[in-house]
Structures are given as structure tokens and as C-alpha cells.
Length: 195
Image 1 (cartoon, rainbow, N blue to C red):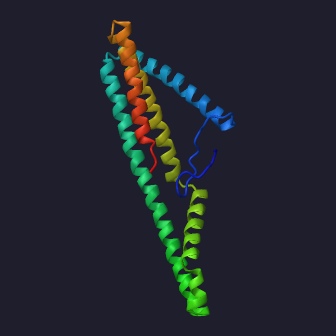
Image 2 (image 1 turned 135 degrees about the vertical axis):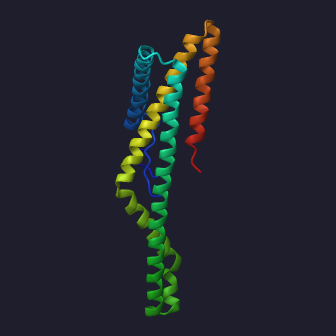
Image 3 (image 1 turned 135 degrees about the horizontal axis):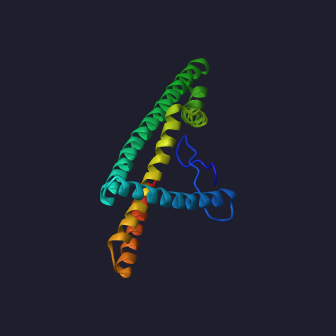
């Protein structure tokens, strides 16, 4: 599963279960993310108390930054997609020009054998070549993606801490935390859906 092509021209590595090394590392990464985001959220809450900032204001700030990073990530992804489309279109036009040359050189019947298969193969080769070349935009998109995920994880921890501190009833706290978890899992499932 590691390195399997999940998008045209890309290799998004996805974790899984089944005893693979990557699945194990993915699980460790998730566990570390939760524990680190919990500690960061605790430190932010302590700093907010020191600076006399309400927990709701802190949550708003962190969620605001998460939204900003999500918008930047969407823009970077669009830029990367536009670059991919440009490379494909350039490869398509070069392949069609080459097919036209072959038709002129060998005649219409023999040159016709190279038409669509040759163009499709050139597009595929260009996308594969682009996947091996990484630019500053690719690196920036990765950094923004990581920061956005960290901010969302911290937001979840801050919201959970807010629920724990504001509700006196254990049952209400438990139901609120379950609702919070369901909400964020639902939002994540909507954002990771590939079409």
C-alpha cells in the first residue's frame, strides 16, 4: 500500500491495517499526534490563563488559523493540479505532433496505428515524470498540510478540554465528548473523500 498511486501523477501514501510496517508506523504517528496535540493544548490553555485570554477566544484563534491553513492548502493543491494539467496538455500536443509526422512519413494507414495509444502513453509518461520531480510548491504544500493537521488536532483537544471544564455532569461531559468526536470524524471523512 505504501507508495501506491492514488491520484494521477501522485503517490499519496495511505496507511492501513494488516501487519505492514507502514501500517504500524501510521498508527504510531496517530498516537504521537494525539499525545503531542494534548500537551500543546494544555500548554496553550496555561498560557491563555497567564495572559488572561478566555478558553473560547483561544479556541477561536486556533480554529481560525486552521481555517486559514486549509484555504492556503486548497490554493496550493489547485496550483499543483494546474501544473499537472499543463504538463499533460504539453505532452498531449507533442505526441499529436509526433503522430502527424509519422502519418506524413509512413502514410495515413500506418501512421493511424500510433494515434490514441501513443498520445495516452505520452500523457501517462509525463504524469509519471512529474510525480518524480518535486518542487518548492510540493514542499510548501506538505508543510501547510502538516501544520493544518496539527492545528485541527489542537483544536479538538482544546474543545474537549473546554467541554470537560464547563460541564459538571459526567454523563453530559461524556455525551458531549462523543458528539465532538463524531463531528470531527464526520468532517474528516468528508474532506478525505476522493472522486
